Amino acid sequence: MKKKEKTVQESMDSLNELIRVANSLISPISVHDNLKWLMDRNLRKKHFEQYPKCYLSMNIGAKNFSLPICNRSGIEDPNIISFSKKVINRMADRNMLNSSDIIITLKRLDMLERKFSKPIPKPQGMAARKGKVTKTLNQIKQLLHSGD
Image (cartoon, rainbow, N blue to C red; front, side, top):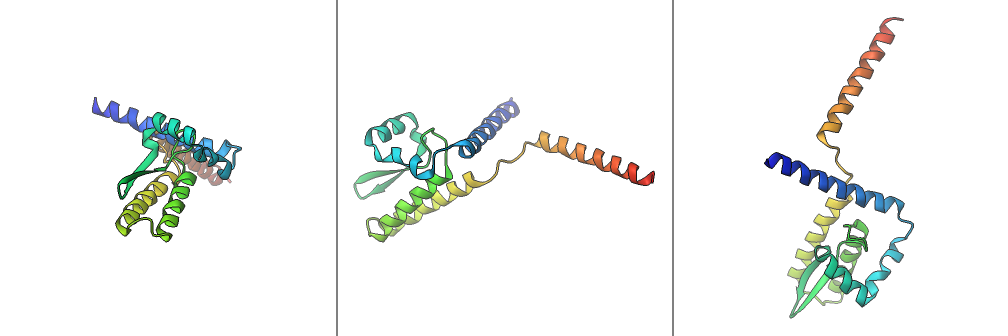
């Protein structure tokens, strides 16, 4: 039963990755236009209520500060993550944060950026089928060349 649950979770993860990549490929909106929604306080509040996992929280003194890691559709986006990294670096340049907050947040953002900028891995079943097809084609090529 755990295998079935695991495969369902893996398929959901790969489906989310495919949606993320498809969205980035077909989205006609540029990165700067995609970031305009962050300027509107009401939209940010709605987005935070709808997708609370799309924000990375950090504490600045007594204040709680959230950095976006998802785009407006609620999909983790490497462009938004790099934007959040730029914000943290600017805050560090202005000495608004202490060094431990900066280091922890930047490591988290780097980890997320590496995770979501990688290409989608192929499922094992698909790789096995592709391997069988490749072997069959190589055998056909050998038969054709040996007949010459």
